[in-house]
Length: 261
Image (cartoon, rainbow, N blue to C red; front, side):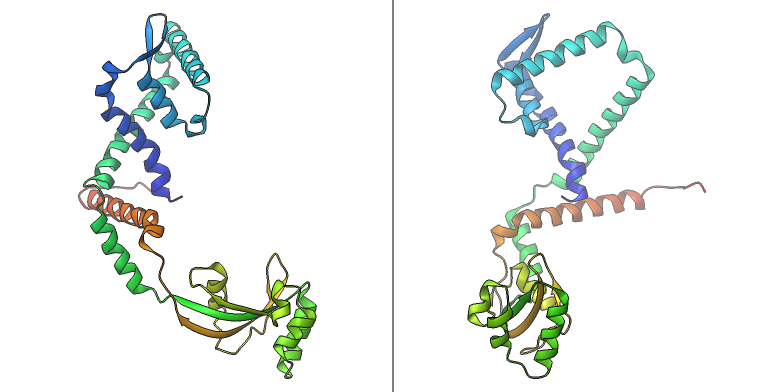
């Protein structure tokens, strides 16, 4: 999760709840504790702020709200809110809510439109050069064996025959052939990262959880970029970061900041 998301989402939730507070007066009463009502609005707020309890039985959540209200009332009876450490914590919470409001304004307004997302998508796709790869591999259990096979290949050994006899991968029966790998697959990206030319194999074995790999790049073709809907969440995060960075830069440009040594 991005830093922006970690900061913003909990605070956006607080702001969203504040904006919906007008509905509180009409919210059904679920329980009463010493004359203080617990409403459906309180219930919904608790679930929104505590996603782990979203599937908890309703009566358990209501009992939790009752317990919290009892604790709150008892804390008020003891005057705990007057303690300095409690006052400091309240001030910090208030600051977080105000920060959340500022973030909500900067990042969420105007709402990110579909047109804005599609424009960014087209820009990002233009930067990409997705490539599908056709590859073969030999996988063995230890590095020493892998290095010996590379030496054998360097001396003219037949890749497919060695794969059939020595590879522990499921592709061994096909002479190590993996076929075409989609440009979006991690394995395809890993193969491309080796910087191999067509028909060449890595001269240093690569280790994975399966074993030690010797990979030959058989062919390359133009790939297909990921569909728009598949990357929509990432596009939203990019625009959120852009808006946040722009907002923070504007604040710094307009501020007089002095940092003490």
